[in-house]
Length: 264
Image (cartoon, rainbow, N blue to C red):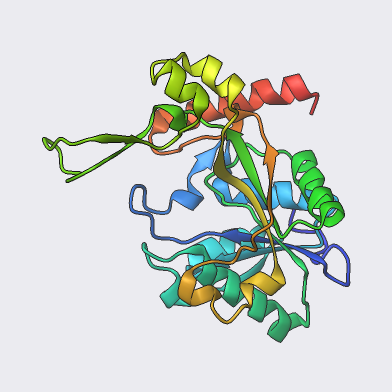
């Protein structure tokens, strides 16, 4: 992998930015944990190189150990400032830094910025390519991978009064329409999802445009998105939480099954 050209082509129009902090509140150096013999950072880098529509692959990190891992597999490293590397740091900081770093260091001003989080490794390059093709052809401001929601808002409520455990008050439905008012809240989940499809942004793949990252208010508001957002539906099995050793074992099996099903 480390002998691949990076950038893959110029001018750079589509840049993958892989955010990989060292600090994780749940698992230290989580981005270097291994799945199927490969670190999570390696998984993200390799699928980015495999995607035909990606022009350059960059890892944003504040940590030298992660930087070494990224360089080993051919990624360029944007040395993220500590101020954007805290447990409470949002996405806007590393986007802003990476975009400005690309222009200052390489003269690149890519229109499309693809976020591949290492903690969502069960991605396929063909899906990334299809997402890039969609945002280019649709004119959307941004594109997010989504999955059918595991918890439908049909059965969600706001509580009038204190939200503390042990408190009580009037329930106000989050999801309100004529059907719900007639049939009440206790409808089967599968039926409700079929009647009123709702999707959850799972963070596997995000694509935004450079102009939204560089807006003056982007850092202050922690918002690098335009209003016209589109979604790309992924197989919910690819959406994983990797916190315990058993999660990694389960994820590896899911990926093997998906490869067989997709013929990849």
